[in-house]
Length: 134
Image 1 (cartoon, one colour):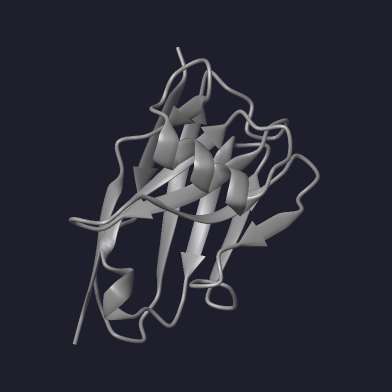
Image 2 (cartoon, rainbow, N blue to C red; image 1 turned 30 degrees about the vertical axis):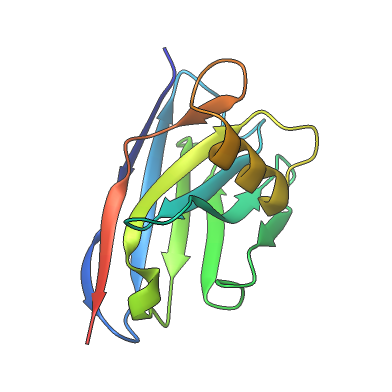
């Protein structure tokens, strides 16, 4: 059974930092495209970042230069380091294992907006809330 469990969310002041973690079981994060997306209330899911099996990364323009995606292949854990947080970063954050031909944030966005988690298109967790306040 594939499980992705996010942690590390919370409330932080503008300009602060948080590191999200995603513990993966039943699936090899090291051999797969992995990513993060978020969803704010009343808004569409937004792909944020991906990392492929070789460690190549891609980012959405909204977070590029502020967020860093990484993974620990020995522990099967995915991370998202979030710096210089803004109020518009407030959302529920999800880690994902999208089944895509090319690992990119654009393809992650298509998957998470158009489909739901499952064996056909990929898996994601239940999310962790991030709130940025002034």
